[in-house]
Picture 1: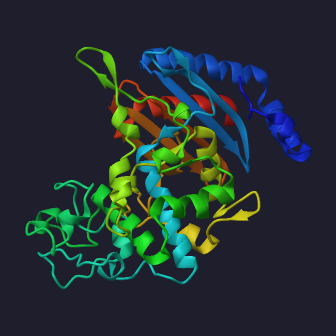
Picture 2: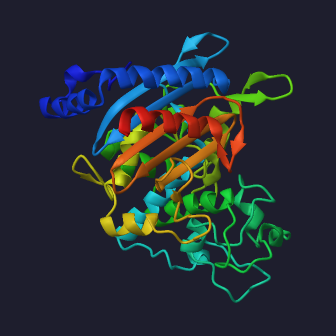
Length: 385
């Protein structure tokens, strides 16, 4: 069991709070949770899993199970960092909310004016596509032409730009789209004047004391967790090195507001489960963590307020009622390169759970990875309930 490592350096008050929570849950429950997690990992063929559990403002439990690297037989640790896939979108939306708080933009702004080229569905040329529509995946934009180059949707650079738009009217329906958030990253650069990776580091990660980021070469490669894609036919795992491609040449020739997809604002954050839990707690506490204010309470509530009722989606935050029975959880999940991640909290009861696996059986049950659902419920049952 690991309960927040390096405790010798923690303030006495924090230590007292932390161990009080642990004593309340009891060590037998922790041991039971770990036994169940190990059994579940065998069932779901999971390579490795890192978890963190939050109660109130405190992380009360962290642990890493299994392997960081199969070929080297390296054990996974709490300090190791993963590319967390689509949970990354929430860092982009949080950045937008900071710019909103500073009065530099509004979520009702015409997205064309923010991104620097015309963003209009040619089937609905008079319908303004707002920043809010893009953040909530109601823009009618799709990923059919890819999302790693903004030129695909720029009518001045691509005569086939219309293929990037669906038949539905902007604002009318929900359609998940990675291109939305890579464009949002470009907006952050254009409005702030800072390169996307630097903005997130300076305005979110550093103030919260978190280790991570979007720029591969700025991070310690020894801490990267190898991601594995599972082949259900051969029942074998294959490493996915592209998850941490440094893209050095592209960054060397970087153009602000245009090259932003190099960092993948839509999915490229690298961070540990423990630090992701601290970030999650900031959102659970409506924008503030341990006295550090990242966004205003008003912006936090706006970011979490459902826009698409059927999907429960807000702005890079979803409301999910099918994760823990009887609970409506708020957060996001991710899936890429064989990795599956989940970051969800209960806003009224003030608890949250982060689970990240670097490879497992990809079984989907009711549109959610079963390995994540099982892990979350094991932790909830034993350490929260």
